[in-house]
Image 1 (cartoon, rainbow, N blue to C red):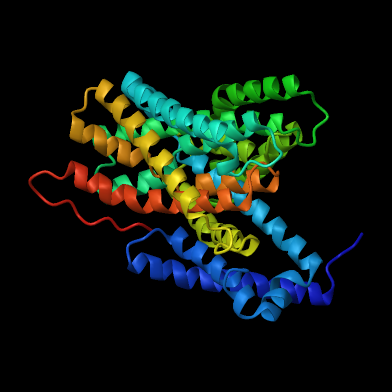
Image 2 (image 1 turned 60 degrees about the vertical axis):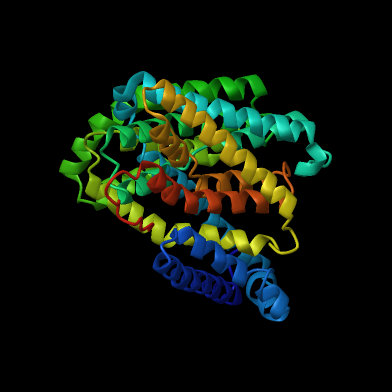
Amino acid sequence: MNSLTHTDVINLLLQLAAMLLLARLLAEAARKFRQPAVVGELLAGIILGPTILGTVSPDTFNSLFMSNPSATMALDGFVQIAVILLLFIAGLEVELHLVWSQGKAALSISLLGLVIPFGLGFIFPYIFPEFFGLADGNRMLFSLFMGTAMSITALPVVVRILMDLNLFKSKMGMLIVAAAMVNDIIGWLIFSVILSFMGKSSSLSLLQTVGITLLFTFFMLTVGKALINKLLPWINKKLAWPGGVLSLSMVFCFISAAFTEWLGIHAIFGAFLLGVALGDSEHMSERAKEIVHQFINNIFAPLFFVSIGLKINFVLSFDIMLVLAVLAISFTGKIIGSGLGALRGGFDLKESMAVGFGMNARGAMEIILGLIALENGLIDEKLFVALVVMAIVTSMSSGPLMKWSVKKAEELPDPVVD
């Protein structure tokens, strides 16, 4: 069995050190300007990647990231695990009982906030495929992906914004969170089906893949959730805390991810479903969740976001007209769709606008979607860059726009995004 050489190990360690150090420094700088940490981490990747370092000092860039295939492959393994863990903690944010408690209003916001942006995201790329970057691929599949990318909300970003605005426990806050949860589950299910259509390596037929995916989703959100809820008290009692619950959580996460990867959809979907089932358990304490979040968000998440900048030259792949088109579709679809859902749920116009602005936060979810589509040849680099810009702009603007729309007689505190 081949193993990393002495030189490979040194190169890998230097890659990890450079990525984590610059990501931490720029994430802290982003916080000083009250921006999400992901903005600084993405900027770190752009600085270390072909956009800046590869242009200013190509020899340094090639020596660090391109000259050693074995170290690069090992780094890619770290990044793959990071993506899986990011979707796992996104699933931990989902609380199914909260969704049920909000009833029809949350369902109305979620469905309209999903259908309208999905429709806009599907129609325009289908009519103008060349403008949006489709080359020789399947136009229907490409348009389905764009619809999905325009419709998914970043639940972790939404939760943080609502907490910063002191709206998390309000009726509006609970409805937004519940709607975003439903939105995420449906959106990732649609994307898993799209991946199965792309013919990823699997011994199963398309019909078998879709059928098993739906059954697995139902199982994890019902029987699987119940089994986890019964097993957690034993784990908390018999094993060391928090080591026992954290290590077994990772075990189940990787098994679930391996199963959906075997299905041919993607490992991230299994990790997301396991996170939903685990996070909804009354025996998974908030302290344990916080430990998982801190570990993943400060170690693995920076590696993933920095790696984005290492793959693409953002200057050469930046198309201003495409970026503006993606931003227009994303803002229009999500704000109008979610806002109409809120109006139907009994909110007034200003509150409905706040709901729409809150649901418009995209964050890491669109970046993960885009990267998977890019790696599978479904989209080109220009569209990927446009999706990254859209994710950043929507995450940065949702808080201020929500604050503006719900402002009454007294000032709300300025949002501080971690």
